[in-house]
Length: 295
Image (cartoon, rainbow, N blue to C red; front, side, top):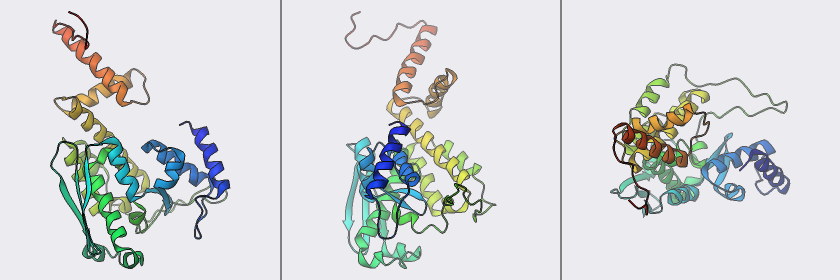
């Protein structure tokens, strides 16, 4: 959807007050950010209003929306809650055709992470544990879908948040994050992953080490963009039986060299066919016939 269309939706939504709560009133820029975020994930504007929440200065994705995105992209995926008690929630997750892996989050985990100061863990323990478990398992198994998206429950515990814009439109330049954590080793780990599960492990490790809270926002953005891109390239290589993810990047670079600014999956598929045909012509092999084409 075009930016101007989203801006019109944002203006209408703000005027309606549909997203306002007793504790928060979102302005038009914040609602627009939610709609842009949702649009990138494939949500229509009103779906974004239901699926996304504004928390600590950033858009977040609800637990139900996490599950919805998984099944939209992978209808045959496994993403089921197999244990649901006030003390522990377990989610079985797997990409289509793979064996499920169990991910759990318990009250002991919440206690260790110092989360029990949140009264919602006492009022709604299953909901809180389920949200944590779904978001963690989703990023681990489906990194190409979520690429650094967090749930409201997770973002609520972040020790800092992006600078809120002042009325004059100028944000604070203060950033309390650590200066001694380098992002480049993390980028190297991302681009060194040869499978999607490997990439999921890197994402999980970044969460365990609270990378999002330890590096400047612009640095963490590099990490998020890197594992989003690499996840797409790994998925493309897997779907089209390429020898390595390097071949996927080669096809992508051909499109970039020809001036494409946005490389879609449809473009990649078309360019891959053209690239393979060029290779066959160089090797003087017969051209692949299209389905239904007579010899």
